Length: 295
Image 1 (cartoon, rainbow, N blue to C red):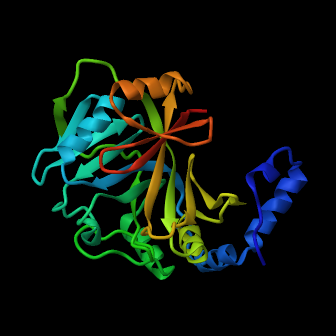
Image 2: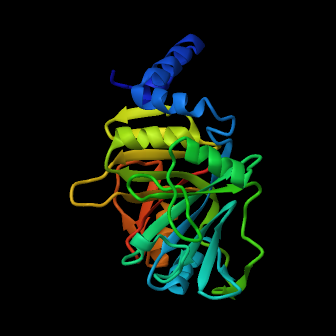
């Protein structure tokens, strides 16, 4: 059975039609498999609140933090103890920047810049019990001190309890400018993963976040609700490796003309795209970031 739901098909539906759509999504084989595996654990799917932060492995963490700091928050933060690790706040979210020798980064990701993990906040999080429930559901974990749930493509998910935020080991670092932030970030909106097998990845993430809520064909994507944020899966493009492909940040005062002009003044590379509700830019390490208006 093929799940053939598109975004425009969900608009203007009656309550009965919405319930029918939900039933159709539940009937998809890549969803029912995960539901059956989750049934044995009251801790799954995770009771998520939102996507909270991203970890980036880059050659120069301080320079990368400075780039994002000029856009979103000129007050940088850092770990008080080595190795050097920097942080930039995005409203309720943040980005962590580690170097290629930082043990928090995935060992297989350290040879080139990568968004090495994303973190979700979970209500009533019980680390040991949740880890055991994930393992029982067939979720595999990375090796080392910071072993995180890791999918078949090597994409890592950190799970943390509310309220989240920067840890007690993080202290204020440099304020890189006396100016206000160019863009006022509210938090993360969604993250897009480029995966090698949509069906396999759908089963994996349904175990974590529950059934997919939407599947589109053009572009081909599968969407999951992660609390008040979202996660999307799409096929990896030919010649590329599976990865955390894009990140979308909610901002205040989004303006299709004024917002890109603010970025251009900071010499930020704008990436052309056709969605008038989004703005894309590329950072110095090649990561694509999207901006959209906070609802």
